[in-house]
Length: 509
Image (cartoon, rainbow, N blue to C red; front, side):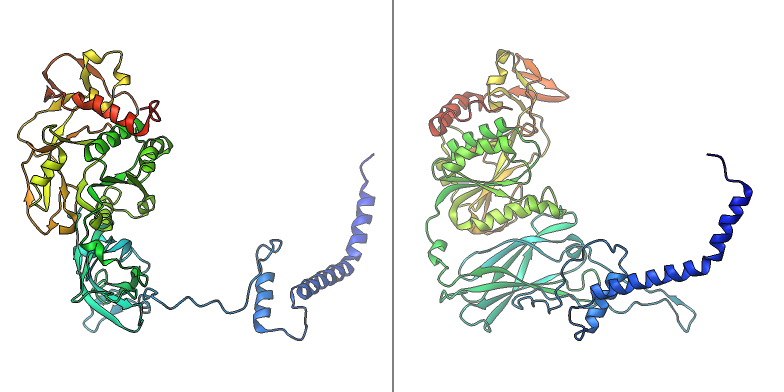
């Protein structure tokens, strides 16, 4: 087809130009009709019941930048009110925005306006009775608030039989983490009332009033009021405060995280169940380290009633020291205070040792006059093994083949400890500084612990060097051969086989 000539082009343009006015009117009419049709679709079905809210709804839909997206059903009925009982008090509304001002003396007074929130005033983990008239509240709070201000606490008990009747007392705060906190620090609030609480056993609630006392902004003293504990009617068993504890020995574990070795966990739990005996219990706190393989190792002991596993991964939301370790051990202390005669605090790469001629019961009976005792560390190398174990190291347990002990002198080593929990108000990682009673030190002739640092999260064979010496210097540290735990490894293996059978025989590193 040939190209149109110049005369034909001019003819087409002339026709279009002559029809411009009619085309404008036609397009305008079509747009107007389309708009009216759209408006009628958005109006309510009854033309005589149009409210201001209906018109606002229609206008908002028309002005929406996404007209083809389906609009969800919107209820115009009033929202259901929140239950008024025990709602935290809202902070006061901030003042109107202030502006810079020039004062009469010519000085420019600058204005400062605050927005948002930097950290929570208080985060609860648990609240527990400490007796007929005492309670302990365990949680986290803003560290700068406690470092640079004087926040205060008040405890209130609201009776279940008469909700308008309440009694209050000053809450004594304890900061057990010695300043190790980060954004948050650990707080234990002890509430001691003058008289027994809930003596009639009608139930009630413990309310905590947490006041910033000018922390953050000295123009405000914000107080949050929230429920921390509830007792149902008839739910208080006062005999628990004087009864003989259910367990002789109780373990409160630090948070476990990372890619833990199932084999190392297997060895540790079998060793300590054997050491602590039938009247013992272990609380393991999972901060992300109890993966499927480790869970398989713990299951047999959980089924036998020796282990309780707590999932505490949610605490990772709050930036505290070492997975909020101090909060976790304090919660364990107060939660199980009346269930244990002695409560131990140490880690899963540490092994408590008592000489066979001095069993654990005889040692602790000799320390019964103390509320707390500390345990000296025996640090073991995590790389050095015996040449005699060559070609069979993979079949031996960790504490069986790691046999070289650090004997460097003149340094202070970390200690672990045990307490009689009914005498403790708050606890730490290496010892408690809030204990009612004496503490025993330097008792390594009776009890000590072997520390296999770095082995619990190592998934490969730990033996790196095979030696046939009784002493050496390795990486500028002196070591001696110490087969103390190696000598009892066979007994631990037989104990595991007796207790749970062969379920864990194929456990991997």
